[in-house]
Length: 499
Image (tube, rainbow, N blue to C red; front, side, top):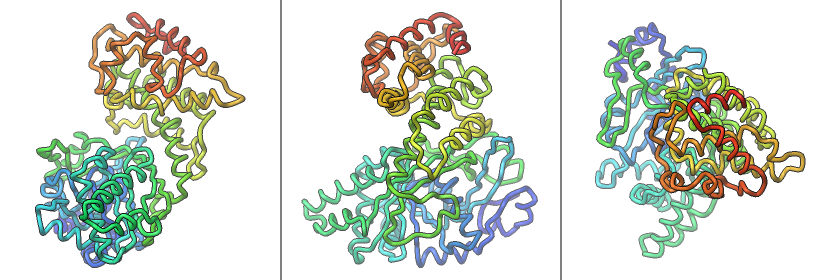
């Protein structure tokens, strides 16, 4: 049997015989270097961190570009650390699921220490304070989801650690949100600053700490754009790993319903664009694929992804996938009608207004989405999951493009065919009846009940939902015309073919 531990990796031949790539560096030495001179600590021991950031550091360690590893801290679900990280010596298997049907198997050893963000555990919190007091620390990063920054108990602890760094001599550091949300660095800074201000007013810290947090030459909060799909551990991959003889490959489900496995399954495509603000320096992570640039360019890459090249396509597939009874996105991409729909949406309509960030090619990005990412049979993403909170997504994913068409001298909303079809599909989705006439359960959405109670005409008046006034020109009228054609059994498929 193959044991995913330091001791188990000593039998390199057995692992390599099963096709696993193994660390090429002295992990014990790297762990010792990291303990003495920590450079990067990350909060959020989830799958995207294990599949992306940890893999980039793995490559840099293998190539000799860095000699310290990663420290991960978990502040929400301590069982991840207690039941998975530590028993496996922080090792992980990365199964990269390629669009051609092959799987690359790799043991990731770059995470060399795991911590629990628990102020009631003196040993755990003191180790974190020690890390934050280290002059060598360059990066404090996060993947805790956008709502994590609004979680006061969590952020209080983070600010407490930054206060330790301030007290240690106002040491510089970059505090980096790597969460998939708009202007993530600003959201993180706002959360930290709000707490620091309250503490200064109440006398819990001195005013100079607030000044420290707000001095970008000392503490930076860069923007980032991250894009990589890392679904929940897949049974097919578990079976493959078990067949290889890896012990304890089954996922652990924590009491907080977190799914954690010795492996992460992820797509091969990945992007992390970062505003290059690192007051204490940084390693050459660009050699592992990260893109460092200025703030304006990060903003453009985000708009390219969210408004044109990925998110609108996802939402179109989510809406029509639910209406046509699909359970996976990749199955939808085997449907020629749906594939044509999202291809036209991206290439014919979105690309005419795309913001080109230069550091990533919009055409290449879109091509990868259409040919590698959405059709990937290993990516078990569902239209039902993506349909969550659709009312909150439409203003950015479609409203921005509609506004761009209205503003451009050489474009008109009359030219739009696919976007009105998607919006009409959303009106049909709100009915909760699929193309076969069967009821389906709509995905959670804060405005779902409110919008369902309105007539289609009233829904289209909601500029907060669509990001613009659809009645300003003929767009609302055309959406309603399409919506009427989508009524009746089989009508959705008929109109989908027609478009």
